[in-house]
Length: 196
Length: 196
Image (cartoon, rainbow over all chains, first blue to last red; front, side, top):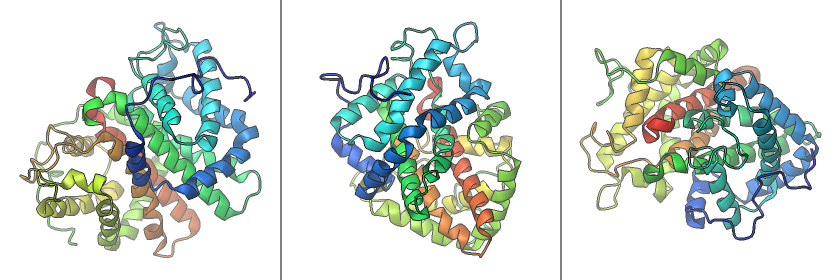
């Protein structure tokens, strides 16, 4: 996959994106809650280099997992119950960007703004709109949370593949787990605004 | 800590507990989403034996973590902003039971019913009521999700402590991570009933 042309619907670098209701102080508290520190940012930068040419393999692993479970594919299905291929493809491209963004982008206000956008795109407020599709109206929150496990556990072999010492793989893997958990917590906001 | 006398407010074994709105089919889908299978149940049974006499140490680690972060202790704080000690103590006892229940209880309808109860006890619907305290009305969903990381990562050294082969520790640790992620997904239900 190319990482130079922005995928359709990838609005991270838009001029003046709508800001997140979550501020930098909230983010600091969330980072502390998953023990995410400067070492983790450095480990993710390393992971970005490790993963850069493996993004397609990672995505294929995840799509294979989703594709083998009807209750997970259902989030991509139209009214006829069949997965909408154009939707799967568009998400695939953005999901690839997300892997590298998780590793390489600073976790700042712009990042928070795009996290907010990603969260909304899982919920009735904005799902399907980016890609102009008529798929299921929401990704159920329980599967968003459950997905933390496969999306972290499957990452380890990819982090090992470039021959880094075990201690570095451990650091990259832990940082990946922390960041994914934190991002799912951010994406959960629109599901539970009041009690988030 | 004793594990023979049921702690106050521990209603797992009540006669005819209110059933969970989540059924066994939903649970199977959730298990599949975190790749939880029979091997994991067996690994957790092993973990139960490893952890049985370390429950207090595990809890002290977690309480130390929560206690060192004002935004996490806040869930235990009363109107004066001070943590309610009786509440911390009561949760401590039930939390210890929860560790062993995660390892040893069958994940059946009774378990689902208690998961439902645990979820409600984090939200305005039932928080504080079990212990008759006047603490914060909700555990924010974001911290419930974020807590997946510390509550899993900190477990590994305890699983290693009894000299099991690395492969067994890996199995116990993976099973623990899967179960905790799945349980947090279950506890998230009252936050997002419609879109859960």
